[in-house]
Image (cartoon, rainbow, N blue to C red; front, side, top):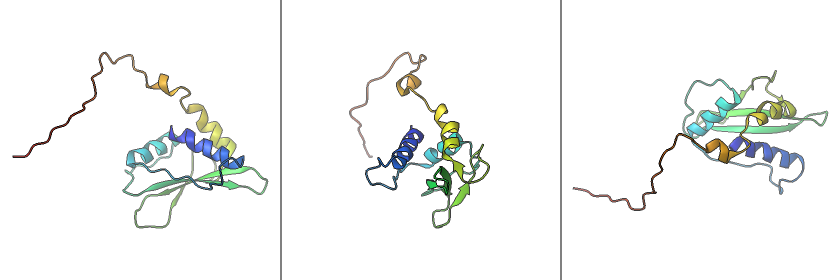
Length: 135
């Protein structure tokens, strides 16, 4: 899942194993953003508009610990983001240890097993030819 990859990217950045990259950008759809917000437990009741985005910002604190701040851009023609407070975090700067503890345990460990279905009785072959006609 995407959140597992985001967590891995954060760990790589902290351990200087990010190959010089300071940012990684993913593109998706409104349903992707909605799903991540729901997974994180962020209460946002509107459908994300076109060109909205989530930013997982990593900060190194004065005591050398790390914190995550989640920013949400929900207006296409705006440069200002909304800082989102994550549940279980008492302010917008969520300690990285807390963030990992809250969310990593909920991630699926075995994607193949998670995607199995005992209810599927029959599968159909892929469609290889599609015909279009006009009158």
